[in-house]
Amino acid sequence: MSAEAEDQATSPPKPVPVVKYLSWVALALMTTSSVASLRPSPTMAVYGLASIFLYLVPAIVFLLPTALVSAELASGWNGGVYNWVSQGLSKPMGFLAVWCQFAMTIFYYPSLLGFVASTLAYVINPDLASSGLWTAIVIMVCYWAGVWVSSRGTSGVAGLASGGLIIGTLVPGALLVILGIAFLGQGNESAAPMTASNLLPAWAGLSSLVLIVNNFLSYSGMEMNAVHVSSLRKPGREFPRAMFLSMGLVLLIFILPALAISWIVPAEELSLTAGVMQAFDAVFAAFDSQWLTPILGVMLVAASLGGMLTWLAGPSRGLLLISRTEGYLPPFLQRLNKHGVQQNILVVQGLVTTVIALAYAFIPDVSSVYWIFSVITTQVYLIMYLLMFVAAVRLRRNQPDHPRGYKAPMLTALCGVGFAASLAALLIGFVPSSQFGGGNVGVYLAIVAGGALGLGLLVPYLFYRLRKPSWKTETEVTA
Image (cartoon, rainbow, N blue to C red; front, side, top):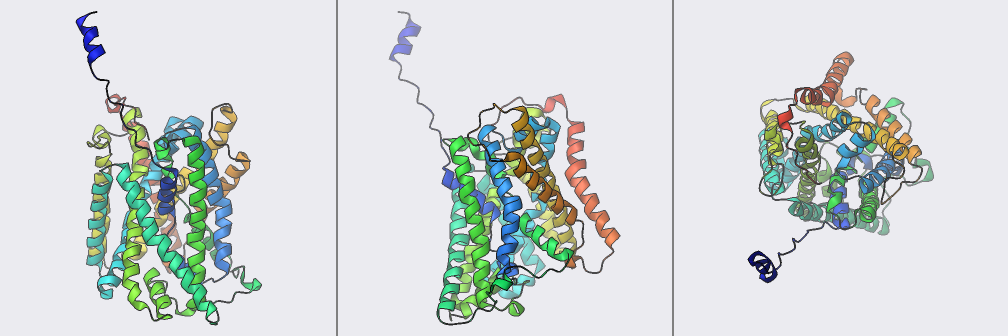
């Protein structure tokens, strides 16, 4: 026996690397955290019993198709929305889809963290809620803290996001519902009428349609965490299971707290601008328990930060998958830190977030302009959904024998409904709402159309046209 063979025979076996799997329950909680929130509860409580209809309709035409279609795609093709669209349509279209999924977060983070700032103000000093400087500081501190946490790896994000959902959404939501039932159980009359005639909202023309569309846009993000499907032990079986669990949780979180608030707080007394904290304060006042308001404020902040962490981990990861294998982004944005996280992408995005945050401090009337930018990012996100539904139909038709862990029933019909709903939302987004005030409609359309085309189409087109062979690292990155 040679010396080399003897060394191999006597040397201890190499340790088998330990694979850290993500449980399907944790993935479901991450998905729920990225979609559901108590923030719209006061707004929908104004409609009382009709809020059920306003949530169920978009759930049927948008949430259900999105969840089922993404479940089939993720159980058959790794890599998230890029791989789905590139396999079903083309690689450039795949890049456009994942870019749109990423780009919409540019204004999502300031909006979410602005809510965190106003919530924290109720805990510390309610007067701070109207301070632009306070809002700017909170946005910047929370975002950069989120970047630091996300740069430590997916496992930490999953734990914090799931914990934030339980502490800051499920527990406060359950408390609202319990207090609402107790309020009615004491013999008090519901502030909102609970008769069959109130099941449908009053029809007010196009504004009613805008209301429904705005609600189903609240469900966007169900597909985002599909990039983590390879982290599951049995993706084909566990990802659909995670989608169905998160879908049920999302509906419960949206509907039940809104109903509970409508039972206790009359619609004319509910301040929509004060948001969730005002609603909690009013609910607790009915039970002489207003000392719970700051405690719930801290819990709501935890939920919002958990949701932000989920969004940081998802879309940017999907963008990284293709930038390293197809060379669509420059090498600087492709670099990973020692934990394998796309830190440079998060940092560059953070610089934009910081600029937007500073606008709160230095621009007196930033809310209306900021709302227009929020509409733009929503339009950009809907482009991704249109591509995803078309790609799903083509994959079922062109690759019928491709192994799938889950096959959505009536896929073509589901995609047709989801596509039509997404297209309707895209078109209705060009209708000015009351938040635009009496501004010029032409100017509004020019800003929204120009912004959506610029951010959603022009920027990714420039990346695609300017790409160089040297940008390809030829390194396979798994989701």
